[in-house]
Amino acid sequence: MAQWSLVDRFSFDGHSIAWGAIGEGPPAVVIHGSPFSSYEWRRIASWLGRHRRVFYYDLLGYGQSAKPDADVLHGAQNRLFAALANHWNVDRPDVVAHDFGGSAALRAHLLDGIDYRSLVLIDPVAISPQGSALVQAAKAHQNAFSGLPGYIHEAILRAYIGASVKHALREEEMRPYLEPWLDKEGQKAFWRQIAQMDDKYSEEVEWRYGEVRCPVAILWGAEDEFIPLQDGEELARRIPGASLTTISDAKHLVQEDAPEAIVAAVLDFWSGLEVA
Image (cartoon, rainbow, N blue to C red; front, side):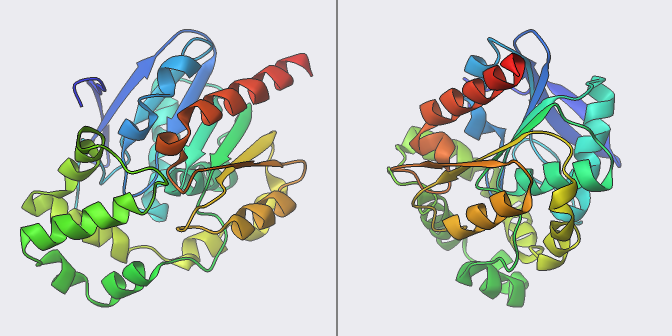
């Protein structure tokens, strides 16, 4: 984590949100997914920062941000993003969002009226129904999972995060994803956010995807086992003009499997908009 720094703090509903920024130029925002943190952008933000002022942050309940006993998924994250955009005084940023970050970006756009210059969605949570077998078990037995012995909790975490990548993470790469969830507060927070996953938040907006007001590019790990490629194809169908690019040899956490593919695709997308 020494190579990834979030030195700034923002207060949202009385909770501390960790954020940072890199680069110069027009504004861009990268939004991470669950159960990850902004650490997933460490290999990508600096390259995008050669062309943009890139803002990044840990979602409420994740990473270095506060982990309250409250709703920290769809119902809160779009409001947080809208508040941060106002705090940063950014106008029509280019947004790159992954997993639940994609949900936050879509909801902030459609429900909170935040306009973007462009939107890149990477394996987003956007089409219902959702939820793996682990999610369903955690929803039914949250207290039991929250009270697991620490070594069993860590073993499940390792397996869960490990399943998100095609190429196994080295320990120094895996550890920063684990650390926010390993103490008592983190363990409760992890199972709390898993139990909060609910199709109702996607169902609230997915019928409105035809109203998206900016160019959209969708990137999808070809071997994603968390969210099937069929969801990406359906999302591209629902958003007028959206492109869909499949990234080979990658699962859900494309930032680890193929960061160079994300950088190339995003910069190419941005360049195409400038030419147009």
